[in-house]
Length: 188
Ligand SMILES: Cc1cc2nc3c(=O)[nH]c(=O)nc-3n(C[C@H](O)[C@H](O)[C@H](O)COP(=O)(O)O)c2cc1C
Image (cartoon, rainbow, N blue to C red; front, side):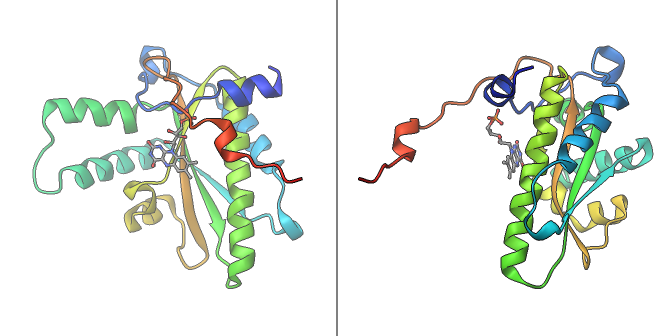
């Protein structure tokens, strides 16, 4: 696929088909996405990114954590359980992306930018291979329990995103964008 086409057509997906119902994604797609991620630029060769590819046991625990965060004191309704299943259980793969913790705020900012490039490279590679992804950064991503389940030490690494990979239930809608010309100013 042409690079520009991948950039312009890639979409975030939110609800996913179950792997056993048409939602499976071969491991090679994730491996290619990680290769693309590792090809991202970084300033001063800090290589700040890390990738934790969650296995089935971890995925089950993260799903339970997602449910407990939505419904802390009771069981979820069947409707909510269905939605959380489509969001958190169905994606064929989950990769947590980490950034190495550094003291210097300037380096940390540049490293975050590099990690964002890496995640976008993943998303473009996944799209070019015919699948979809989502970068999530919500409460589940940053929860202390997620660090424990994924074996990430918060003193040395920050989880900056979960990349969910799968087959969407429906073709994701293109969000309305503010007009490009409102973002551009040319100087004399
Ligand atoms: C840094 C970052 C964090 C994001 N976190 C979330 C998230 O927590 N939940 C979510 O639904 N989407 C998240 N997204 C995806 C955006 O919602 C999505 O990119 C946006 O709606 C535009 O859609 P598009 O990716 O199809 O262009 C995140 C995107 C970025 C860049």
